Image (cartoon, one colour):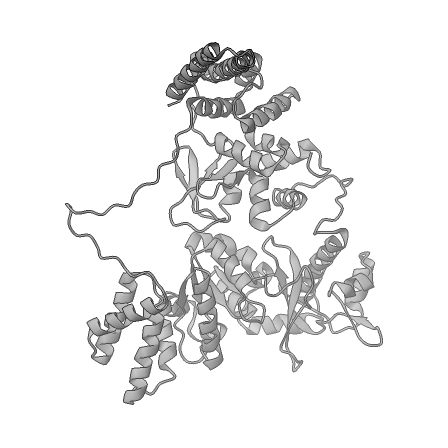
Length: 605
């Protein structure tokens, strides 16, 4: 049994987390027949091959082969251990693990749990001080002046850290947290004289949560002349700026619903946009977007709109972010915001409707933005600059894989500079050849001269192999069928992997379990066996299977076994004839063996 968690607790947690709901938080699922399908989050694909069976509470990708239950899915997609996955699902469904459970050497150690609890208490404290005390009035009025409502302040749990040096220190100690542990974790800070204080004194507080909704750090904004203007928690194992995205936990459902995310530069922009109705906004934590963050976004959505400040620094940052997001496979757009403003200023100046309609909805496609970005470095009134600009744009267009997209921008470039489209197309072709990009194949317009690729056919499995897979599929869903097979066939399956599965399945049922593929997976010894069970579990079966059909499967398997036994017996007799120097008898036995093998081959195909 994995870890030290009671089996009944694990099963209760699994039952409380429907696999369709959990998987649906990560990918878009559409129901087709009995199952749900979507694009696999574990490998790149354009055609959905990822299937979720709600009735069996399992998933399987027919492309990459990954499969399992809801716990396996969380382990795979989040990189969690079994214990972490169970803990996450327990919290998600409002359940508590037994207090006596102790898990050693886990990522979320007891010290980490203390830190998370400390952050949870501080979030409540800072928010209470802001909303209900005299000490927080200055911060509260600052946020109101910025246009934030009470509802939005509460939704984001914004707060205020008091100016007192020891108020927060005493608060945490009263809650049972050791000050040195809190300093080590970055919750508190210590100076050279070892005086321990709250590093955010006198700042408006922004709790920073991880993707599971747990506060793992803070951002503090000065409301006076303190430097720096924004101050984050220090880097720790729990708080890594390059891996976290602000507001990801709140925005994730909206990102899925809208099939796109909006990337901002800071907390204020995210919150202002949220209040303006753009609820799918994220932000980096005061640094440029990292590849880790870009891949995290790509895992949830294909389209990302970059909405950074529209000053020179913001445009430079947009270009850098767009390149990286494009590199990891995102469809990138860049918000079309003028006047050198940042999103927060724009919303306060022009209102929510104009921001949504004129900035977000009219975002430039990646290549349109890139052409504008390149253009700013050239004086197009000069012939030399015009030629250099065209050359630079052609370099970028050559990297576009879609011919239709390339053609669209080539025509735009040709019209803008009164150039021959054919000449530009030839330049693109030359550039693509130089970097070894596969050239576009001519389209087939004739219906009588269609070129088709040879179709790779999977090797057909022998009849007994298919019979064993079908039989196991029924055994996984019906205890009575498993009992019948156990009585008549036992473990006499021909495929070794199938022998392992039925051995564990018999033991599973002997312990009094009902048929439950999702639960059975946890009893299996290794990853490969689990994935094979899931693969077999996804095989379509009839609800009204007859005893005759089950008997036919058993007979097919049994005959394969008996013929193999017979062949082995004949081979032993053949060796004995050869030992007694009787070649005629040995040859006769050899003919018998060949005939049985021929019959076996014919019956299997």
